[in-house]
Length: 573
Image (cartoon, rainbow, N blue to C red):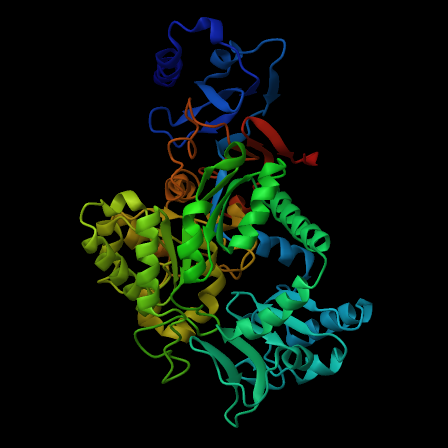
């Protein structure tokens, strides 16, 4: 009775005296609607007109909105939630990973050599071979010839003498290149490591073939130079194929908005052509990642809010404070437990990030800084605090600045997020993916008190926006949700489960919190009349099914702007 009353109040309160408008283009009936709206947390049905939710309530209530032209989907007890919002991933990077060699399932270095060798047999001489996803800590056995777990490139080079090869680490913060790629890049024994990067050499000074952090650019620029020589039409076709692969992948996972964690101005121009041609199938938010001089010149002209009928937004700036824990690039306050004397890398100086912070303030951009290690997070928080003090006229909470990843935090730094209104853009799946080597890297005490401390942050009032960091991890919200609420690794071990989110918190981190972190909480993130009709239909209720059943959840429909863009039985439309 209470549910029925709430349902009627929710509808009639909004549409009293507007009976002539009581019609819908789409209705979902006989479902379990989880609204993420405290006014009516649960319902049975949803009505949509054009691109907007017009009513939420019981099936009988919503059937009143049906006309001869209404599309009716009886979801037969399935669960409707607000569309999943991927708050941190790499759009074209996801597409590239889907189209290039996927090294994530390789159990050892020999398997990767076999995959690359097969690709080389099919490639033209001089053609680049690209792969991503290897992780030395996840192999069942180390390479026979290795340095700190990294394989030497000798075997790779023998298998690919006529093709340059670039294989990117799962984290995206290291790569291994064969000798041909290094020769094209002009790298030899005398090449110094760049600031904020490391050309890995063994204890005898021999080049291993591994490049970490900023040193990766030496190989990447050689590849980009080859790509830039292609005719413009060919470059566009390749990028379009990558974008389509990323979009289709996202829609199959129920993702309706994707926050791209860093693209340069040229890539943003490409995204704009997609929007102009109505080729964007999901909402794409973009963080600008380019050099300071270009940003100083171009930021005013590149700010886009709901461009292309609401499908493209550019209002964020991306920066990197450090690298990743897996490649030992995360910048720590103390030595790595498994590498005494090493504390990771500062890849962008705090002074440079502070300059970019001023650019962000002046141009009305959201600043989003990658920080994984405890030292990196402290430095970024210090920069934010100093910037806010220089601009007392601005409420820091209104800026919604973010720290991307925020994986390792000292107890004294945790309260600073909520105090300044800093969003922690964290990835639940990273905790369970990294868990097997976190204690090895940091020791038990730091791992327990500093690592992926979602519960501490939430209790302190911090907003967490969830995601996968694809292609670092699969673009799968269900797997990430499961990791967020169980913190269980593949072998069933729980990684400091006291820091887990509740299921409600994890759902919010993928819906309304993601919308807030993108300045879109007024129009997205909950199933509320007046908001845009971005919905995901799940095969079961992830808030109530037994824990070990969560991963069996299927995406039945993905709906954007009130239109079905993915159906499990029919694929992407």
